[in-house]
Amino acid sequence: MLSRITILLEMIKFSHTLFALPFALIGMLTAARGLPGFWTIFWIVMAMVGARTMGMTLNRILDAEIDRRNPRTAERHIPAGVVSRREAWLLVAASFVLFEVAAWALNPLAFKLSFVAVGFLVLYPFMKRFSVAAHIVLGLTLAMAPIGATIAVAGEITLYSLLLGGFVLLWSAAFDIIYATQDIEFDRSQKLFSIPAWLGQRRALQVAALFHGVAFALLLLSSMLLEYLGGIYLAGVGVVGVMLVYEHLLAWRAKDPADIDRAFFTVNSYISIVIFVATCLDAIFFW
Image 1 (cartoon, rainbow, N blue to C red):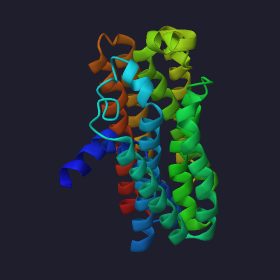
Image 2: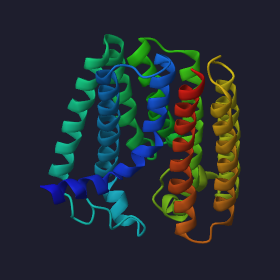
Image 3: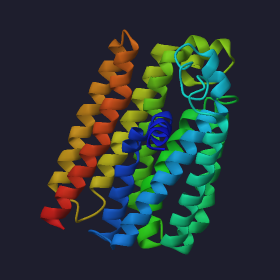
Image 4: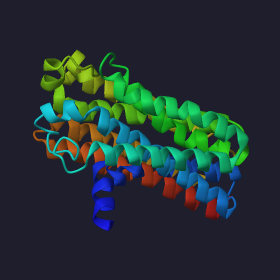
């Protein structure tokens, strides 16, 4: 049982939860202006785990045939036969239940809007089949993390949560564009839609840089919105700006998939952790 759980977690890249979870926790901390109660924290984390697991597993199921044809992804768990479709669908069902129970436990508005979130999670795997807006839809699914956590605590959507959500949307859409540069020729051959397949690598990276530039502006604006956000948070925003520049230097100079992996996973996981730690330290010293 433990080995099967480990395999399932590997299939959905559970470690990539680092991308969105810190932003949910930032939304929670800023909405509560500190730590909310234990059960609020617990159910926010459970909602994040449920939503992310459901979305990623559904994506793996629906993309299994595409992954089988792509040499880069042919060894993924479902096309390689390591995980059965039945197991994967059971994981989707279990994570959906976890997400909805968590949303219901938080408050009525969180529960009502949870079905909107599910809609985006279901929509995303289909997007690459008919629109280059797939990157934006992925961004929207991750942007729900800080907005949803704010709703969970405050029972409403705040301007700060929208700005932070806007950052997450454009930041994640941009790194998804960078990641998609690995599959330009395959996507074109399979008539799949992505910005790199549409515009080519150079222009796609320019679009990603534009997205990241606007995302950074939104993050900087958010740091000026709440009077109790202090210098540590602002310093964290500055570090994020430097890391975004470094990510694009890696992407422009990439000569093998390992370079793209560093730009996609390593740098972006550090970005979310840096801004989360900056928020926590700011809360400790200034709030």
